[in-house]
Length: 51
Image 1: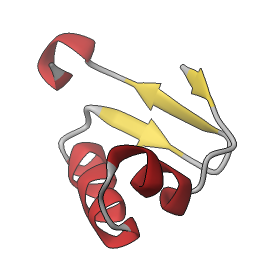
Image 2: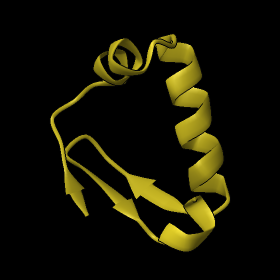
Image 3: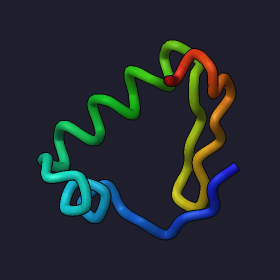
Image 4: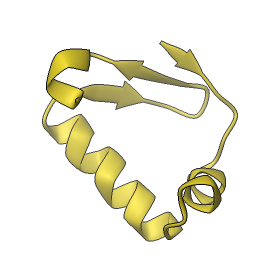
């Protein structure tokens, strides 16, 4: 579990991508059941598969 107050825009700035790209990738990972997230936290459900 990662507690965060970062927005998708903040994550995009940190990773050198666009907000749209961050949203797309987070949603793809959520659809694959590798992560779950909301406004306050990101839950990594399968760290080995995420690598």
